[in-house]
Image 1 (cartoon, rainbow, N blue to C red):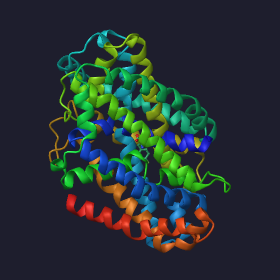
Image 2: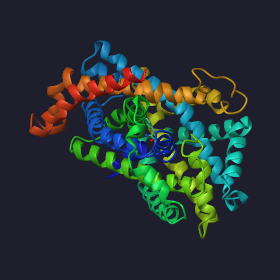
Image 3: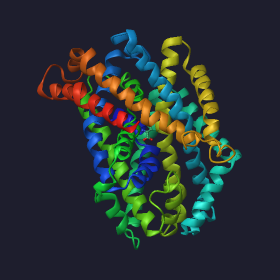
Image 4: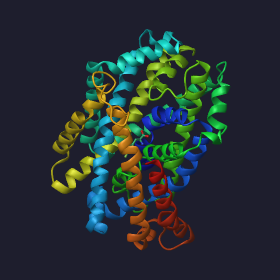
Length: 429
Ligand code: PFF
């Protein structure tokens, strides 16, 4: 139970509540949703099981695990994962900082407003202010560093056990409010009725990237968590629990944000501001919204922190194992480096907003690099590694032998997952 909640704590975060609704909105809604669900329960589930198995079999960080189980060029897969950890955490912490800031802001007059024009302007002004975005990014990193310093069980599991269920209950309450707003139904239709004409390589690519990002796959975060897991745990049920919980939270966020977008006349394709602009309007329409608002953003911050902890933990586990340094100095050093890499992302909607590469701001570029390239590449590597390089050992690790489910799983990892990901990546490029 503790482990499932900790792993779900890694998976459930800004990816579900901030990223999923806006990517679904940009990608046309219903058709994206079906593609997403399909990928989560085939490729996503199989790769997650593979990552957990590698970690538990090797009992090491990603780099050490690939080196111990096979060595050679496989070790670079581990390095790629650690690199992805740095990149993702650097901008993840910036968005995490936004949620901390909104916890504070929603205590004030922000929640008296349902005008998405004004709420949008507030949001744009806030993310353009370098002092605030950098300060909150720093605060978010400081909290994450403090938790990772405390060691894995004490810090993470205790917090996750209590706070994740509270977040869930609040999401359900908010969904009910959003769904009963006048005009909300158009959002539900947008979200669940597929418009297949909207499907193109970009939509498919977005669904795959979102699946990897949301499930924390492809960079060794769950591999690292798996390395702390006891032999008696049944990995398939752990993976199924984590996949399902993560999906439920994403769906709830979809049924909250998208109906609100339509009810308040906002643009579903408005991008990364979607959650931050529409949620305050929902709170404003709720009895007790003034209390709900800050509590919800506080819980979202907690969900973001439990994910950030898994990102930092991956990098730190590598530093501890491979350079035999102590946990505290290693965490501090890695955390400070991540903070500095994140500064350009914090500036990317303000002073650095003119800097664009391939039409993307620095933060978008980091997100694209990590979610659309590094994570899917990591996913292929993990699938091929488990499916071909160490398949016998992994079948025993997970299923105790070559049973039927074990063979179906291997078949997914050997052929379906790599072929699908490669095809999606190539057509995306
Ligand atoms: N899965 C997290 C989320 O949805 O917010 C983000 C994340 C955590 C991605 C850990 C990758 C990772 F390794």
